Image (tube, rainbow, N blue to C red; front, side):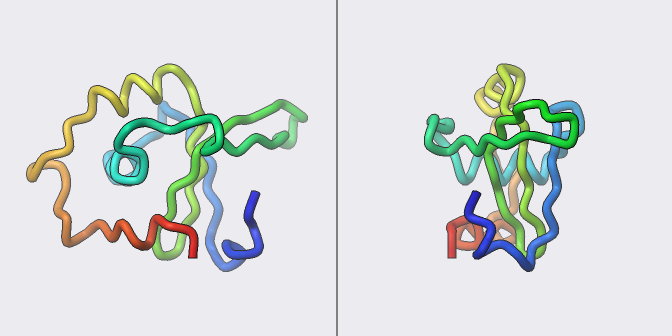
Length: 98
């Protein structure tokens, strides 16, 4: 994981069950065509289980969203429209690695 650039960010691991619209908006903006294998970050948690995640960032937080079939379905089914996303609130540039 590229932690040297993200040391100042609060790191939050998010499971699909706790995924809110803000994080789902960020995922759909960063991965509009879905994510690929190279987008997946793999690590071992405190229970020594392998965890696979994709990351999205806000100004102060790095979200690691656990990868699952339900996440893929949610992203595919999620409709990004003016009712769900205010483009003034999302900065795609802040999602890119700095």
